[in-house]
Amino acid sequence: AIEFHENSLKIDKEIGDKAGESACYTNLGIAYHSLGDFKKAIVFYENSLKIAKEIGYKACESKCYGNLGAAYGSLGDFRKAIEFNENSLKIDKEIGDKAGESACYTN
Image (cartoon, rainbow, N blue to C red):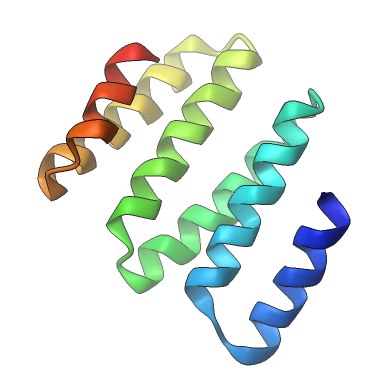
């Protein structure tokens, strides 16, 4: 899966698809998170978050914060995990994403 996401990322960069690029970084983060490489996952989540902020993609921004919270929680840094989860919740409330809000409360 990682190789496919890397190939997709390369294409998204070539064609200037910032939303696609952000999604690829998220997917790479999820892949590394599932492999237990939480620090590498965080790097990809941060890249995704940066792009989501640049293009004003609030739903993706919220998901990035949630993913960062999960990764930091997996590392045992619960203070950062809570901080990122609260950022996600704030955005979900702003954009009216009830499913996102619910997910924040269960993390």
